[in-house]
Length: 593
Image (cartoon, rainbow, N blue to C red; front, side, top):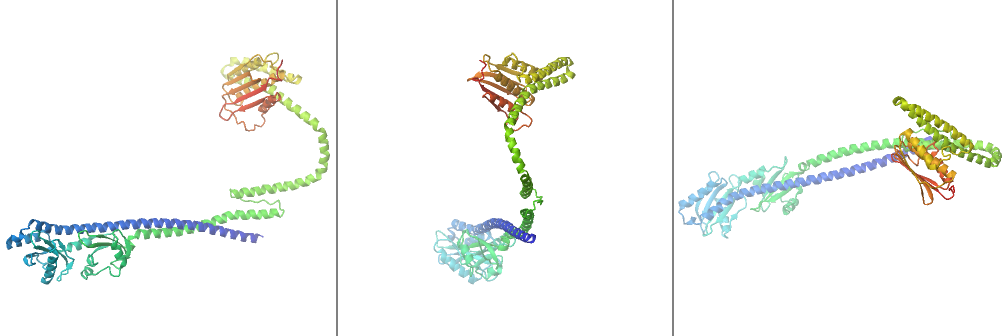
């Protein structure tokens, strides 16, 4: 049985472990996936923004440089519209001054309306070949005949393979044209200096996609076209805000962005290798993967530990229940886990003990059943007599509590006051002792009166109001707690009603002093709505009216006395609050008339 039980327990532990492990693993994977996606999206967004910003900044720098080359030419042409009416020396001097304004100017030529050169200057060391100059001059002159400035495509010099462009600017009042050959080495430098990350780079493409500037000069000189066989790059250039992944100029997967150079048809492209662009992402994913593996392994260990720890007490509990089911009621299940399983085991032990006692009691009951039947017959006969004796005992107990207890309580307070004054004011002690002596006699007289008639001595020939007032004056003198007592006169009550009100009122006031530690008590005795009403309110500490107080019969006797006369007693109190006792007894049937 134990072997099969262990097998079932092991299967359950395995299932619990697997379920817990799968739940934890799924939660961890979901969290890791969400975190990875957040990192990826953030990294891609920030990298794309950086790529676009870098491309736009480089395009703006290059455009500003080109504008610095074009502006002096346009201004000079506008200011010297009469240049063709000047002497050849003036025209040569004009071109020389322009050449010296910017080191990027390598060659200048002034053409008349037939396209013939009437003046020309060239920078030392950068002179173009005649064939190159003639071809550029012819194309620039033909384009300028429309009256608009002309900017050629990028060319490379035959001698040293340096990039240059040709610009032609027509004169307004004549058909003449000013042609300038501009060196683009500075554009190459700007492009080469574009830095993004550790290995990012930039390059410039012309309108046909030819490479005209970049870090790899050899590929620029070879006029390589990166758009060939690269549709993703072509898609990138069609969308001005796109940032795509594709095979870059360096042959590896890159993250690229671009920006147009405003005054030209050129496009600058900025590329960063994917491995670098997403370096933070890759590191984060690696860290997440390691953390996920550790967390999953830890979850598996925790799941197995919890399953074994949880199911071992269940195994013990099931084994114990099996033994109890076989009738071994002496077996005790011992589990100490300080949880619900231990409580369940304790309940089973309690149940087993109850079953054991029930079995023993059943056997005893079977033997004694006959004798009890005989005894029951005798009990039925004596029932009325015993009930009468019980009711008489309760009545005597109530009378003893109301008479002797109240007087002895007052005697105790008086003796305590004498003991207190013994150290403070010894002159008052004899009077207190004399009063205590008088109270002792009173207690003795009340005992005798109880035996004779059970009517309190305090009332005697006095009215209820006078008797209560005397008691309150004495109680105030003994305890120092003032009692504000007011009562209506004129109603004559039956002796039983007066006795009940007297006892109930004294019980309420004594309880306020003794148990409630009251410092001030208000008592009202009045007739209203054909009822005699008593209200006693104090400023004491109060008590819980729903609690049971073993050994205290005062409240119970108060209610019994009132109900015996058709009345009722209600008490309002709570811990830390004052206590209010209300008594209502109907006058009809309790009048002394």
